[in-house]
Structures are given as C-alpha cells and as structure tokens.
Length: 445
Image 1: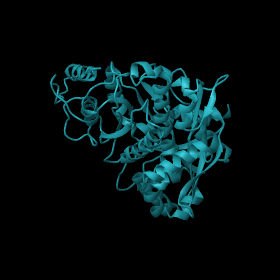
Image 2: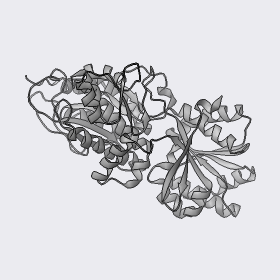
Image 3: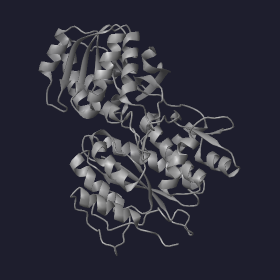
Image 4: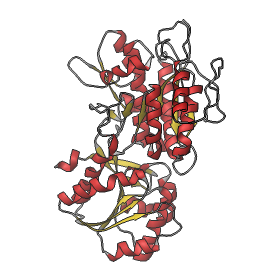
C-alpha cells in the first residue's frame, strides 16, 4: 500500500496560514527524522491512510521539549521516559510489529523557536504517531499546530487553562496546578503553619499556582503575611528577602527554579541567621534543583527544612520494576527513577502504544479513541502493569486497565489524569527525594 503524505500537506497548510516559512514543502521530497530539531528535513510519510500497510516500518515519538536553556530538564526527563518505554515496547514485539523510536526536537523553551521546530518535526519525523511534550510556556503556541495536523500529544503541563479543554489530541498525564494548589495548602496547614510568606517566580509555570493556593489556604484558616513575585535568575534578592523576613512568617511557600531558589534561600539563611521551613511545588523534585540548592544552603539544611508537594509515584510492583529496569538499561540518571513526571511520561507512551494494539491501527485518527479504553477500570477489565502484559491480554480478547509506574492513569472528560499528590522530603544521606503519604484531594474540603 502506498504511503500517503497527508502530514506534509497539513504542515505546509499550517505554515502558509501562520506565515511561517517551512523548508522542504515540495511534493517530490523525502527525508528522515531528525534527532535534534536541527537542519530542516524535507518531508515524511504520514501513518494516516497507511495504518494497516504491509511490511515492517518504524514508528516515531516526537519528543518536543526544551533540551537547552533554563528548562532543559524537561527534555532530559522526557527523552529518557520515552526511551525506557520504547525499550520495553520493542522487547515485547513492538506496536503491531513495528519498532518505536524517540526523536528529540529542541524548542529551547522559547515559543518563538517552538513553532518552527514543531513544523520541522511534522515534516521530518518518519511515521510520527505521537508527541511527548511540550511543557511550560511553549504549549500555547504549539498545541494549535499539532491539533491542525491531527497529531496526538501528551504532556505534564499544569496550566489550569487546559482544565476544560476538549481537544482529542491533548492528553495531560499529571494533575493540573488547580489541584496541586489545594494539596500545597492542605500540607502547609496540617504542618501547623498558619502565617506564611508566599514566594513565586514570575514565569508562567509558577504563576498558575498562586491564585488557587491563596484561595485554598485562606479557606483553611491560614494567613499570607507577605506575597512576593520575583524575577527568575536575578543575581541577588536581598531586598525581597528582607521584606519577607520583616513579615515574620512561620514558613515559606512557593515555586522557584533551581538557580533562583539557590540565591533566594541562601540569602534568606544569611539574613535570618538560620533557615525557615520551605514548602515548594513539584518544581523542587526536578533533577536540576538539588545540585543547585543543596550546595547553596547545605544538604543537611535541605533535608531538614525543604518539602516538595508533587504527584505520587508507585514505589514497588511489576510496573515500577519494569520502569526502573528500563531506565537502568538506557543508562538514565538514577534520580529519574524517583521522578513522578518521568514515570508518568513513560506510562503515557506505553498507554498510547497499548491503544494502538487495542485499535489494531497506528493511525492517530483511529487509536486516540482507545486511549481511555486501555486506562480506565471497569467490570471485567484486566489490570496490567506492563506493555507485554497488556498485549498478551488484548490478544486473548480481554479488556485491559493499564496501571503503570506512576499509578492509575484515569483520564477525565477533558483528558487530564488526576493523580493524587504526596509530600516529598529530601534525604541527604541517599541524595534523593523520598515520598510520604498521599494527600487528600482538594485539600480535604
């Protein structure tokens, strides 16, 4: 069966509409997937219209993230989660017999770069069946491009504006910031902190948590004695630190990237003579945070005073073992095995692959409807923990419920998987974050 170049047509239409120049929009061109989003490849064959084509051809996951710049940790996490999932998928025979490859495309964390890189991915990635990413400030500009091209994407973006989205090409693997904020408020109040200072950076990913946190914490009876928004990565925050300490808070609650946190918290310790308890969002458990903040305030202080509120993670069982074994096999940073966002992305790639198996098609227009069918519990559904288990159950005619390394992934009507949150404490001896008990949904209210 001849492969039809539908994606080439879609991308060139997008480029024309948005007045974006895309090299390679030539009907007679051909090319292969780029691993970095570098020089523009010419075109690629779409899987649409060739989902049941004979022969063996490889499928591609486009890992569309920042691999350079301040948010490069997004790309590193997504890259290894994808590679680990692909390793287990291929070991089990692939997706309907097709191997899976993860190709990286660097948005640089800049919307100005993200759109042309997305277009480049769409014309160059061979048999693109799904996109992992982007996150942060890139997704508002990139999502319309992917939707028009009808390519399903999965993400871990927290922005509440997507809480009511209806696109069937958007799949959020982790909870919204609107649910993180109540968990943050609940934990803070349960610790007995009734008067806190709120410190968030001014970037988008941090700002989406502030208002829902204030609402939840106030309802619980807490008082915010000082609210400060700081510019990321400044050379000093002496003035802001002084204003926070003058309000005499019992604790600091907020979100800061690694460099900002290292500077702010070290200056706070200097001015105050000691650390205050610090409760951070999920940003603190990312791999770049401890290497920056630990030396700045001391690993012992980080372990004693800093807590992070982040999605819960399974820490045992077949799913977690398959996940961690695959990460070891691809030589990933051991730190990533304890990262719920890496686990969720691994689960996302696995679930999409199982949806293709269930649909008996690699055409996104067909298999996206099967994503919730392979992740939702129900009467008669067999719980599976790995891709291999899922394929075996499907071949036996069973309905499956994939529960992966990050736990149950049940999508709501807006395609968000609302997982529980937990309090994570840093263990200075093990140099890793340790998950505590799950927190009640919506601050227990």
